[in-house]
Length: 389
Image (cartoon, one colour):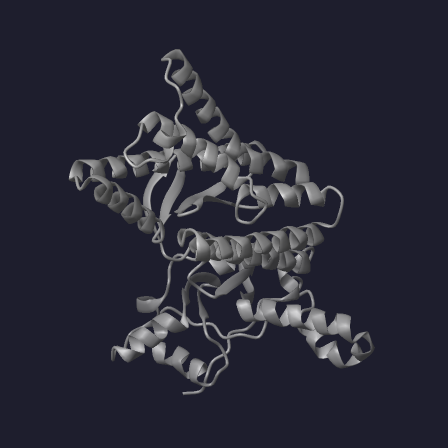
């Protein structure tokens, strides 16, 4: 997630903190200091936040453990002011599985709250709402209240909270998954409007929550729509088969000529018929702007990159493309470079599909577009295109 910093690794999962989470640290620390004008109390406020941090991570690990049960890997956990987000490698295959994964996080808070409550009963400590809401109140009361609030808040029917995913899972048991997501996202955006109104008249912090909920619902709906549009389509339908390649010992000015001609942005580097690197427009521009025009391709190419197969499903390949720093994915078949997949290719394919649905009578006129995305997996590898010097 943009604007996040890695702060550690728990149970093999990278943990990130979003910059907006720092606002929560500042707010709690300042509230404790202003209440008592004492730096010790301010420090206790930070201890409270660190404990809250641990509780949120435990909540997200609950999602991760449940997802692992279905063979789903959790890529990372990001802490936000409204809680945390566990980023799964893929969504559960069945609505019932998504329901279990969504409920696993709040279940951790229920267990923690129950353990704290039993501890209070054994020590004959009576829970006081005033201590839980008062700055500098009982730490145990505050931790109990935190877990209860996290359960109630996360179960609100709004993305990216767990309640939004629970609603989507329940709806998906009775209707199409895309439609279920649209309904759940619409409900989430209604919740965002309510948060915004409450923030204007009660607590300005709710405005941040409203923003996260609105954006989260919109992103979830867009992601599911794209997955549905790309479902069942192989990479070979979208990859480009007319492209230029470079060799490691060529000067970078050769790639610059192609970029200026508007033919290509990123270039696979091929040596002995094997892809050994990628030269991106960003790296190329940086090298040329620094006056290093005599540099060779091997000096600027990325040596770490991911590839795809022409038979891989387009949605999974597109996901890796979006996560990487390079906007081009080499498509390799039996060790040979047979095509390139770019974000623009996928966008063009989606536009062609949309145009085909809206104007089926114009099918003949779209034949060249369809031919461009024809299955190329059985063709020989594309020949290297060179400029004449």
